[in-house]
Amino acid sequence: MPLRTESLEEPQLNLTPMIDIVFLLIIFFMVGTRFTEIEQQYDIELPEATAVQPLTARPDALVINVARSGDIRISGELLTMAQLQQKLADARAAYAEQKVLIRGDGGGIYQSIIDVMDACHQANLNELSLGFQPRTAGESP
Image (tube, rainbow, N blue to C red; front, side, top):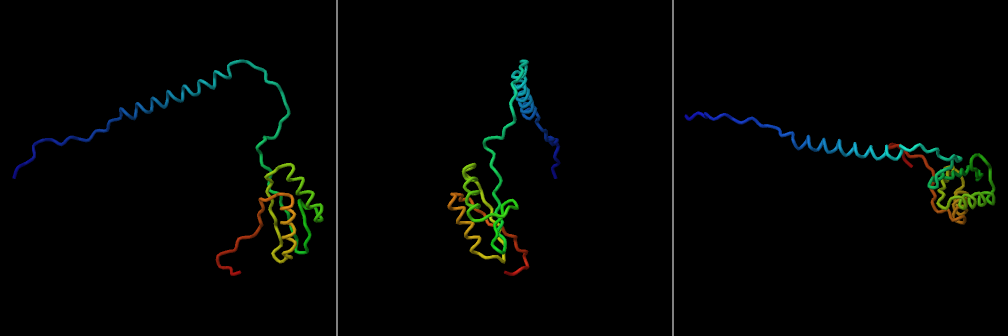
């Protein structure tokens, strides 16, 4: 039986490419941080202004609560249908893409919710959501 006399080479890990990549990343970040320092090296006294809201901020959804009796409330304020239409028109004028969340009582009159939806459509507010509570897995309708 022939015996193997040559020695096995042990595997070697070549770290040179990884070290090159790390040095390139270090150089990249050092150069990048240098540019931000150059912009701030001049002593400039900036003008003062009052704080303003960003132009792209979207307002929260307008929450309309419809009670079982048909009462309509926004932020706790009881409104008639004419007042609701005016408030919706004002909201549309302030922000064209105003969202509306309608929270109607589950045992209430369905017509009241439809009236609120109709008022939203008349004010050209088309992003409507209806509030609900999710059912648990074992519950039946």
